[in-house]
Amino acid sequence: MKIGIIGKGNVGTALGSGLQREGHQVRYGHRDPSEPVQEAAHFGDVIILAVPFSGVKDAAQTIGNAADGKVLIDVTNALDKNMGLAIGLTTSGAEELQKLLPRSKVVKAFNTVFAQNQSTGKVGNTVLTAFIAGDDAKAKATVMDLAHDLGFDSLDVGPLKCARYLEPMAVLLIGLGYGLHMGTDMGFKLVRG
Ligand SMILES: NC(=O)c1ccc[n+]([C@@H]2O[C@H](COP(=O)([O-])OP(=O)(O)OC[C@H]3O[C@@H](n4cnc5c(N)ncnc54)[C@H](OP(=O)(O)O)[C@@H]3O)[C@@H](O)[C@H]2O)c1
Image (cartoon, rainbow, N blue to C red; front, side, top):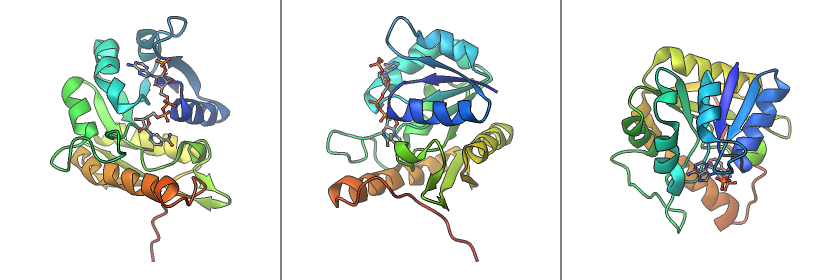
């Protein structure tokens, strides 16, 4: 698939390198004029948003109608400066993004995974779970396939409003990794009997 990745930092490059390894075509967009956001957004059949929360509104405005009808994967976490939830539990970053780009098909994914584990979906040999939320079944299936390509165990967790549960998981992960000094060589795996 053609994937436009907005944000070329830890997350953008991790997902981009993994997707390229699996044969997908990637074009990056960020605020550097040599890699314009709009160009990457137009290029992608699927767009991945991987910018800091503080840049989401601006990035969404720049993406604009290039996201119409497309799958828009929201990897962002709505964090405040203390690494807490910036917008509380009665909405989510993903739902707010859907309001900013109403004709796109927002799917929340990969936000519960440290960037260093995103290109393989694994910690060591252990496969991590990609928790995936969205309202459009076809869009969600596309993201489930991409997560599987990367190496994850894909799990459909329900409609987009379930991002309200996935975003706090990221806060917990950051707290464990950095607050409790457990490091980033870890991740979430759902165990089923
Ligand atoms: N790091 C992780 O382990 C991790 C894991 C899961 C989710 N997340 C979430 O994923 C997002 C990205 O994290 P990251 O660690 O990749 O951040 P990062 O390394 O700081 O990279 C952010 C990227 O976004 C670009 N950017 C910033 N503002 C922009 C704007 N208005 N328009 C277009 N591009 C913009 C920056 O490039 P320019 O400055 O050149 O524009 C940079 O390439 C965050 O929301 C974070 O909470 C992070």
